[in-house]
Length: 95
Ligand code: SF4
Image (cartoon, rainbow, N blue to C red; front, side, top):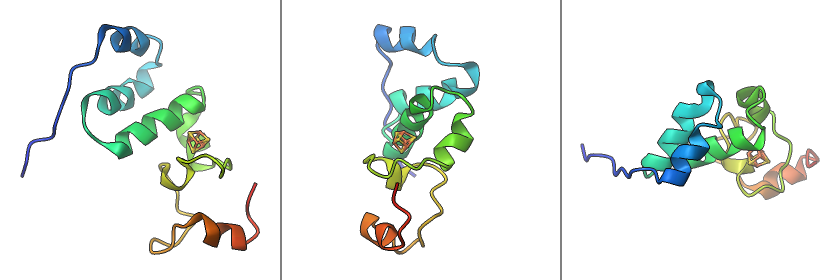
């Protein structure tokens, strides 16, 4: 198995980390140090929810115009083989 690509956080990113609640620090660190789009989306969604009950709120996010929405953690609203925005809108569940 190939080793994951990693990078060090910059000083500015380290300072920003100090503003992140402890519960969400690991997701921020992972997003900033490992080459992973999934980790980056998760961390951004938690930040978007101001770290307030962010896991639940990310799962329940209704801002479907957000480019991250189809990829956010906990998106189980679409069948695995049909995650297109168009199919969701056809169901009349757009916000
Ligand atoms: S998908 Fe929702 S929670 Fe995630 S960044 Fe977009 S609006 Fe915020």
